[in-house]
Image 1 (tube, rainbow, N blue to C red):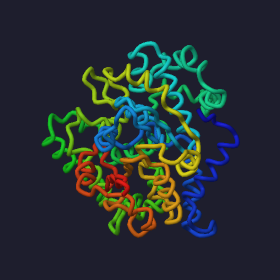
Image 2: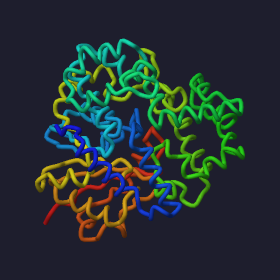
Image 3: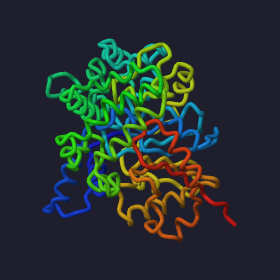
Image 4: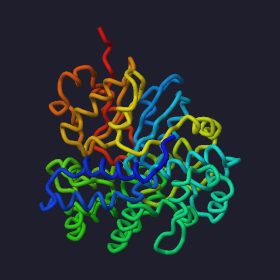
Length: 414
């Protein structure tokens, strides 16, 4: 496994700047981009916001498959191991996300029973978790990951204490959702009330009567019209424009939030619980990510040994791999950030390292795939875009935050 070192943190910071900084520093867009990289330097996603069930459906994993994925919060990397693939590399530019992924891997391997694992990452709100960290996890972490979780925050408590204080309310995304709840309460709406609705019909009525009107308020329209306002969702300035797609941001957010709130039963959608309750459900039949479900605990415990975290860029990681060595590529929404040159370099490495039958999945802020006309034809022509399958999978995605889901498959060579 790749350790978190000072040199790797520096290179990951440089790679993040290369991904986000597309304008001169003295320009307005340049200043916004630099503010984003500052915000993105700490913990952003306590939970990943891509549906792993959809990913697993798209990838059709087999036990000899080798996966490379962006780590983000580490949730999906572990969830993919329910299909028992041969190996997985979890890549991220953010040292905090790598530290969180390493913590989850240590917990999967070394916490003795499922109840402890669930308490740590599903409930994430008990002082017993900090005790478990010291007893069961810390001795198995590398020195730099120990240093990350032991470091004291501004309140004088170590970072690991977040797991005793509602972990999912922390990080950039957790705080963003908290601010959204405060704004809703300014207008007399408690978003968590939707969780009391009995069925989809009631969910839709509550959303249309109480939540949707908030986005018509002058303050909310003004706030969502500022690029800075969506930094808490991990959306840089370049992706903001793609997400808007020529519409007002309030219109886009209503559309995406309506899908999250109204298209799936709440007892099946843990993304809705995070958005509206700022936690997971605690019931016996709670909707949870695959890696937190009791029936998958033994597979996760074994699979954690086959996951390798990598701090750096996706392209740099691929450059270290031999030709025809990987089967599945999960890019999340990272390509929305990239220039044409960066996309072409990335897809050149994907194509070089892809084994026969390889698949690539990713999401975009807008609905359409972003690759045609941007990745050179000599590379992209080696891949088939599964347009109808992509459309269906996008419709199934419970996280509801993205405009499009996309599946590409390597063509058979003549």
